[in-house]
Length: 508
Ligand code: BG6
Image (cartoon, rainbow, N blue to C red):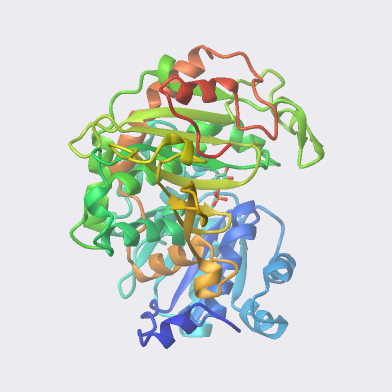
């Protein structure tokens, strides 16, 4: 099987150190995240020989399954993404087990079963007492699960380690995030807590750091003297699917802006960290959020909800008619914001953020738009495009980095046009599909490396920035819904938001 470590081997770099042998216990194992990301990612790590040996997975959920039915269910998922063949999956699936229970069960009930299952599996496979709990459940269950794990004597070990992975959104606002963190800290210390924003595990997001800080040419121009504006677009063509119960309570601001978009902004705007490690990186990303000015909600925020329409030639329902959605729902599925980062580096450089469901296409990009040259010596008639330079970090699809600059067209007369210098993973590294971010996040959590996980201070500050927007909208939505057609780039107001400042969205 081709793997990305082929390149590592060629370049003489050593293979990464493997995590300690351990058991990963996944709560909410019958849910979407486990099927889509967690089991496929653990299996992909297995196929790359990046899992510890011995190793096992225990799933915990309400469904009436046993080890065999759980394996069969996971097998159906793996049929789609099986990286290294049926025989390998058969071998791997023998290390997968199941415990049936409700998250709010008494510690002496299903949590006791879990305790016993962990001991049994540890004994059978000679796995030391290292356990990573992954909470892939609705956020409202996090507190209960952690408290009950503790009451069932599952959170301490004399001889090994315990860690917990918690999915976003972490809380519903700053107050609830602080409460949740307080509850978690009653049981785990900071070094045991792994708060996920899967965007941090994306290859291209990590490459944004490498691009800026491993190349001497870009950092000197990464500031207000050269950059006109930054645009962050995270667009999806999909709707909310079957996630109404989650989405109705969450909406785009809690689901995407508070975490993924502010994370991309932090990575774009941060000062050079001292080291690529948790403390340095986290300190710098918190500083960025601390520099963000209070958002003028009525002037600099556009929210929206998708209507009925067509996308890629297919008729789609309006948000309000999606399964389990309130017919009068004012949950936003789109947001555009203009953010001001008020510090020495970024004063007067607007950051435009935009994200939504049912937009024209799946497209995630951070665009750095440079200022025009102070004096253009060529007549404007020679220019068949904008004379602005761009750096575009393409997170998906076609992951890579593009630098757009002006060039002379061949010919007797001087004619200029924008051209692209491109780095793309598939052409450079021969990888058509990048590893999912969950592979690296699970790998790092098993190793105890928190570099790509969030600190609570960052989360509190992110809530502090967006809480006023959510509060204002939830008190009285100021735009009539639904207000955008599927397959578009969102409500008209989002276009006006940027055009009123003499600029345009780079992706249209
Ligand atoms: C998740 C959100 O965190 O990110 C989803 O809950 C969203 O609503 C997803 O679809 C997008 O992730 P990606 O990696 O496909 O951009």
